[in-house]
Length: 127
Image (cartoon, rainbow, N blue to C red):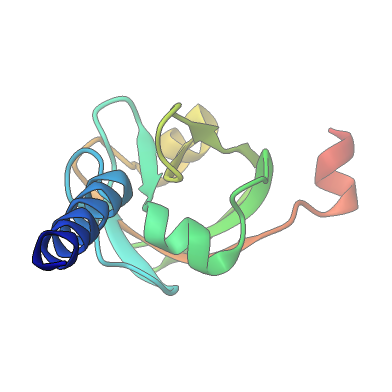
């Protein structure tokens, strides 16, 4: 009987360890769960939307979004931005369009503030 109790305890520890391994994969993510948040523009002119924020906003299955950002004193709306994803994470990235980058002088490494992420409006979805 003593062996049975020890075996069950041992099995429970294995289950917990396996469950912990299944939950965490890759690098630790950013602890951002609400808007607005500040982020740097990547070298490829893309901006990260962290996985925790994607899950908390419930936008995991969205392909496109209207995104409102602030750069300096300018509030900019990016209409119908494609939300790019990788295979093994919930995080998303979007590219700042060239016209907007040139107009406002946004360069890789600059810090922007993401103010709002919303479903694309009907007018921007048609374009």
